[in-house]
Length: 604
Image (cartoon, rainbow, N blue to C red):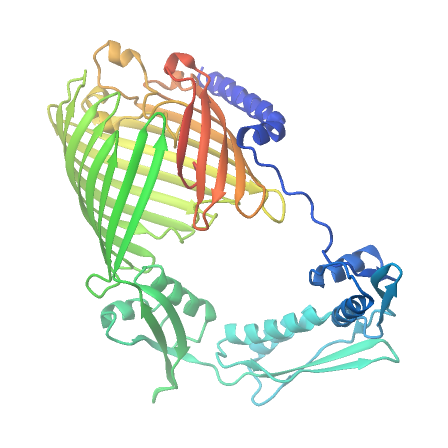
C-alpha cells in the first residue's frame, strides 16, 4: 500500500515537472521579462583576416581590442599594424614559428586587413630536465619528470604547455617536501630546418624542509595556545603545500582575520623550520542585517552584532534579534572555532523567542551547547544538547507547557562546497534527536530526519542547473504517547523552504484539529525539483515543483500537496536574491491563489 502510494506520487511529481519544463522557455520570459543576451560576434575588431581557417580566425579576433571602423587610411594602417603584432605573438605561442603576418590598409573602401601565412606547425622534441645543485630523491625526481610530460614528444609546440610543465615540475618537488624548489632559466631551441622545438627545463630543488611549530606575527593578536592548536602536521614532518594551505583556511574561516599569509622561517638548531603566519586582524565589531518577505509569512528582519576574537582565541560573541510577523526572538552565542579539533567548533548559547503560527502559539527560553563541524568538511559530524522551557497557547491538545531536554547527532556529506548557490554535487544529511519532555505530560521520544539534495549543471558556464531534493522524518515515542509530543517538535510542511504556495507549517493532518489533538504530524515527506537558468553575470530565472505533507501513518505519505511556480534570481555577489511566485494545486489546503517569496539564497 505504501509502495503504491509513493509510486503514484512520484509519477505525478515527474509528470508535472516534465510539463512545466516543456513550457519554461516561453513562460520565463513572460514571468520576469528577462531575455537571454544575444550571441556575441567573434570580436568587435574591424580587422579582416585572410589566409587562415575559421578556428584560427576566431582565436585571433578574440585577442584583438575593440576598435571603431577606421575613417582614414592612417587609422586603417595603425589598426592593422597593432593587430599584426598581436596575431604574430599568438601564432608563435601556438607553435607557428615560421608564420608571417602582413598588415595592409586599403583606401577604397577604407579597411584594415591582415594577410597571414601560418607555415608548418612546429612539434616538440622529448623534453629534458636538468637540476642545478643537489639532485632530489628518486621519488621526487620521478614526480617532477612525470609533470613535465605535459610537453609530449611530437605534440604541437604550444608555449602554454611549456609553462604548464615547468609549473607542474616545481609543484611536484614542493609536494615532495622541497619547499624552496624554484625553476631556473629554461632553454627552448627552435629548429627551423626540422620544424622541431627542444625544451630544456632547469630546476633547483634545495633541501627537504622539516616543519616545526606554527607561530603568528604579530604575536599579540591571538593566544599562543590557539595558534599552536592550528598545527595540522607532526613536528619534523616534511613540508606539504596542502597542509600550509589548510592552515591559512582554518585561520581565515574564523572571521577573526582579514588576511593571513605564511612563510617558512630559517632552520633552527634542530633543523626544523617554523611556519610563520602573518595576520591582519579583522574589525572587532561586525554588523549584519537580513530582510525577507512572503505573502504567507509576512515581513521579517534579522539583525546581528558580533564581537570578533572575543578572548584571543578567534572566538566570537554574537547577539541576534529576529522581528517578524510570526516570530520574534533574541539569541546570544559564543562560538569557539577549532576548540573541539580542527574543523570543529564549540558553541554555547541562550535564546528567548515567541512564535505565533496557525497551529499554535509558543513562547520559551533555551540553553544549548554543541560541537559543530565546519561546512567546508566533505564529511562532518555535529552533536549537542539543548534544554528548553516552553508554553503553548491557542492549542487544542493536552500540552500547554513543557520542559524538554534533548540531544542531537547530525551527519552530513557535502560534495557541493560551501555556497548559497550550489551548481554541482550532492548533500546527504541525517539527524537524530533523542528527547525527554516533562510538564503537562512526561514522555520520551526520538525524532529523526534525513534529506538528500542533488545538483547538476549542463554546460561549461553553468547556465542551466537542475536541482532536486527529498526530505523525510519520523518521531517515535519511547515512553508515553506520540500525541503528547510538544507541538513544535512534531512535523509540518508548507512555506518557502518546504512546499511553496502554502502558508508556513500549515500542511499536517487536519483531523487532529477536529479531534482536539496536538497539531502536526508524526512523520514528514516532501521534495522539490527546480530548474535554474542564468542569462548573464547577474540575472537568472527558475521554475519549480514542490510536494509534501505531514502525516501520522506511512499509508498517508503519498497524499502530497503540490505547488508549482517560477522565480527570478539576481546575483548580489555573495548570494542570489530570490523572488519566487508559487501557485498551490491543492486548493483545499489554502485560501490563497498564490504566494510570493523574497529572500537571499536558493530555496535549497
